[in-house]
Image 1: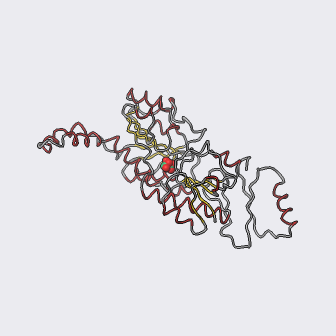
Image 2 (image 1 turned 90 degrees about the horizontal axis):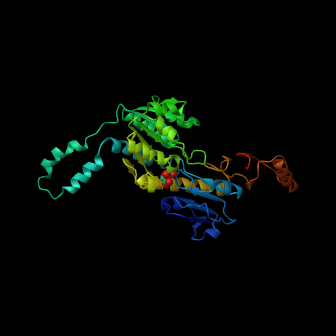
Image 3 (image 1 turned 120 degrees about the vertical axis):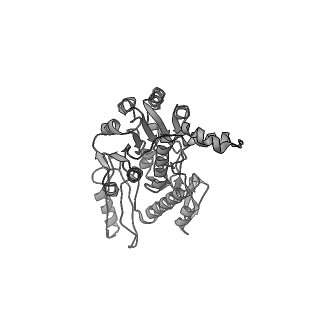
Length: 356
Ligand code: MLT
């Protein structure tokens, strides 16, 4: 029986998929695997028993990936499982930046006791008028599952779309509307776009990628949308650009002291993936990844181990060995196995960087 410790609420439809050989435990110390959403694990001491951590979501900045790799703990995420939910928020963010819907709703609430509200509304509405997104240019930085969906939806809403992604996968490329213009230089996004949305992982390398210099290069009156992570943006520079009017709106899903106090920012409390559908999809995908690894040694969608997939186990046993990426290891393992007169029917050897 494998023991799974959930560090946040994980949708039951997902944990149910684990099946009879699994039981949920409150005790991290006895867990074989962890399921997590936003709990921060950087200071968590992992038990020796821990084989894997599955993040029900895309971002993994709450997990110490390198330490996990050192300790032989495979970390998974669920790319694409919540992409539609985030995409819908991005579209909503653009609309909120263009039309003062929030101001209009607030006006109605403030005047709800006025019997003349219907007549007054017709006069009041001009203060909430705005612009349309059709015909405007959207720049998408990062064309993974979320970025590609945003790009395609924006196209169907009549926007021109520029996409930038130096690591564009074949799958994403196939999924893109053919009118999305793939630019090779991020500066083209800054120079040409009325709206810019970012969908890249938060890593030490991408920290502050939307720097003061980058913001300066954006068009006057640009709307910048951040549903990825706040650490990607130099928020001091963003606050100044908003105050000067160079950036018209900062739409951020990351409420922090800086963003919450910015002029012309529309900030939400990390709601991007907060839909029933996304939570279910992420939990199901996370459970599937854990099962496939624990039962078959297969690794799909890991962020710190290489992809390995030998399909279901069809022989007597499958042996999974994790080792540093140093010469002569495979020879040593195979010779130990042959010392036991065991036959290796099939084998896959994958590496990821120098540690694995
Ligand atoms: C993600 O990383 O998947 C989204 O930001 C939503 C979340 O963190 O749960």
